[in-house]
Amino acid sequence: MTLRERILASDDIPQETHPLPKAWGEGSVLVKGLTAGELSDFVRKYADQPAKLQNAELLILCLKDPESGKPLFEQADRDGLVKKAAGPVMQLVRIAQRLAGLIPDEGAVADLKAGDSDG
Image: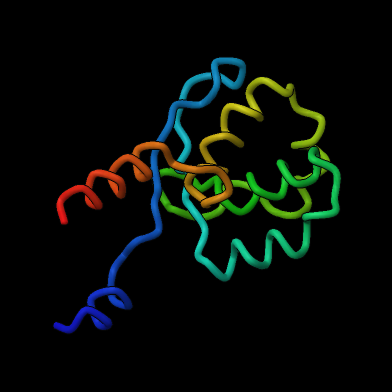
């Protein structure tokens, strides 16, 4: 398999299962990163919007049911998410931002730097 084929065939969208914030009871949620296209669309659409809307939209895009993989929320839930407590929302927003590529993944940055020293 060529390098090009390997890259295009890779299943490279990161995802992690995390416990729900304590305020929301027991259980877990699947947080899935975005494709390059989804990230570009998100940034283009929400860059000029208030942070509360950006955060809600990011959760709508990234939070999935851990059993089915289906979206946990839909557009109609945006106003409800904006009204939830900031602490629990931000716990999940930070994870979603990292997996979506909106903030640096320090582990990935360290891995890249370690790879640079090998050559």
